[in-house]
Image (cartoon, helix red, strand yellow):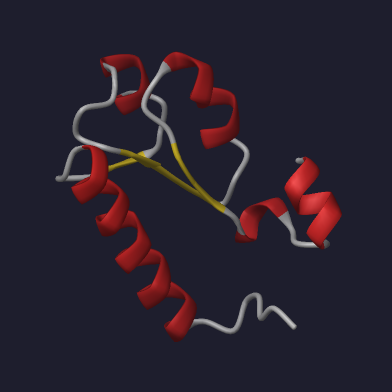
Length: 79
């Protein structure tokens, strides 16, 4: 929430990648939550989009998805 408030960006415009139970709270409040393939089963069941890749490959997969999503929508434009 701090980043959203500090940067004046709505939570639903943020993406987050989480892999452990401690990340579930954030995954559930941002607009785009991602769980890499190596995340705990608890995280996979949290409602986050489960990625095919683990660790770095999962991070890159989420990054690419986010870039594509941002290019196709005008929901939020920084600047």
